[in-house]
Image (cartoon, rainbow, N blue to C red; front, side, top):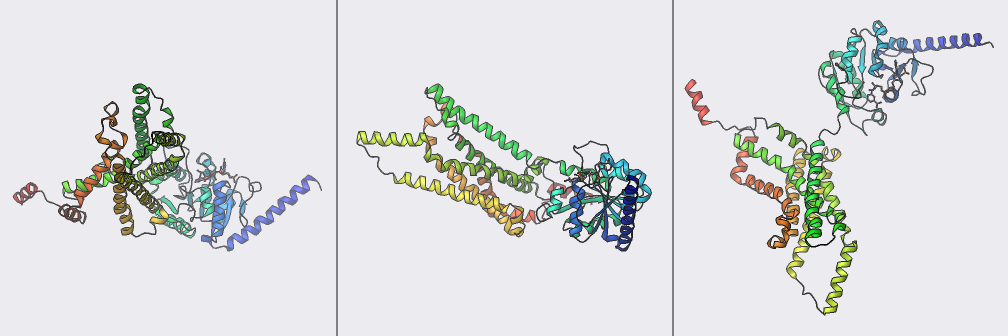
Length: 480
Ligand code: NAP
């Protein structure tokens, strides 16, 4: 067979295939046949998911015959042919290549174009990708949707990934069509309004832990400050004043002092904004005035603060577990025992000390267990299964109890050390003392809020009651 004969034959085969497809596509109801432009990662995952949910899928590609493996049961053809029968077309192509769509404007007139694209950086273009697409094809109805999902998430289904699909667009019917498809795929749809919201949706996937930034900065700041503070007191002081090299303490001893200090402060910082908000409401006599921005932002990152506090508390637990294996501790214990044997001395049993240490450990263990409970209940899968009352009971009441146990644990650690002048090296208070300031303030203020007269006023304000200003009232009555 000559090459020409071969090409003729394959062309006629392709023609027959196209004709069969044409007949088949015409028989499929319009809303069941969807088209995807682009056979890349997202196009393939989306196609597979649509197939699994009972849709028929046709791909529009630059190279229908050579676009790699596609989900079984789909067809690939050129863009023009693919767009012919489908009413809804997903544009799974990068914005940089959108110009290929311009000549297809007549075929795309009246169709719903779903723009799934994202950019590599914020403010890369003056307009959003979806608005750009709408300008290229003014006769089509562009809907921005699905861009916050990854190809991986689409393949695995909504059980494993984010369940929400944000969408926006100017045409209500077009949005309805996309909403129906997304719902059939198992996603819940959040309509963000007109196409002018597309830029906001395109910025969503580019956000880098927005709620974690402040808590992480705070944690790093606290950790670094306390590390250097303790380094000064525990290592540099010993080196300069006592001529002793205690630098080995940095790895375990110092770290195990910094972790609980930071953890306790972070935990109390979770509850401080709620207390400030309550006092602000009491002072203003209304809940209908906005909180200052800094307080709003602080309140929004309480969960992250709590999780970081839990992480530091866990480190403290792990470091405490290895304390008894440390060479330094074993050495000190052996030296002490040997010196007692040599001097034929026995330390008398100190019941107060036994009570103190046992209570100290017990408070720490209970506090940590409550800490874990708080962390577990903040997981979306757990909190979704709780009623609002159950959730607020755990996060608020149990939270304060946790803070109380951990603060008490720290007070027991300090015990009567504050009475000894040697505690104040270079006139500086020890780290544990500094760590007690914020939690103690939080607990005292909480106790004030629990006083029946204060609590009653706060409940009334939170139920909508407003205190009227007597001066304002008298001005109003004069004007009447
Ligand atoms: P990709 O793997 O690079 O695929 C893009 C597809 O576009 C190619 O397979 C190609 O399909 C088509 N294409 C490439 N150059 C073209 C050109 N010059 N003219 C016409 N078509 C061209 O990209 P992707 O990861 O699937 O992403 C596609 C879009 O979805 C992007 O806008 C991206 O921002 C968005 N998105 C992706 C993800 C993800 O997880 N991947 C998540 C959310 C949003 P043919 O060869 O068949 O023509």
